[in-house]
Length: 94
Image 1 (cartoon, helix red, strand yellow):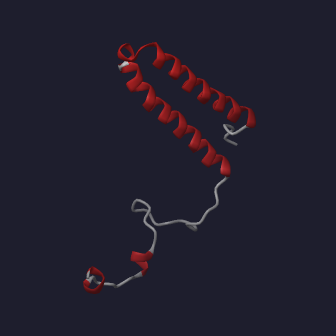
Image 2 (cartoon, one colour):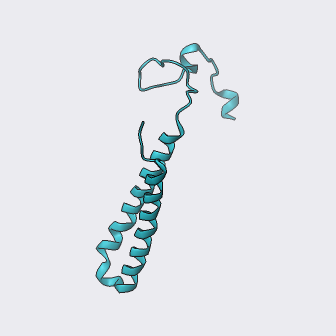
Image 3 (spheres, one colour):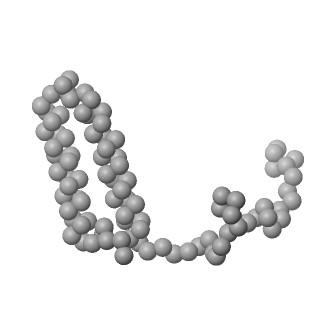
């Protein structure tokens, strides 16, 4: 129903991309290097790790030694992934 009654008057201003009030420069389909995406994924992985570590540290006394060993396994897997990415050069910015 809204499609039928909504005003549809496209203009050059309405169809242009919005970049925080600045006029767009260049094309919107710019290809980025794959390393930037890998760098972002590595950041997200360690950001999620921090999210899992905080509640674990707060409730450490209640969950016991089994949770301690599970957290060491979790951290060792993440550190192995970090060492692999570092060795492959995924953390090099240039």
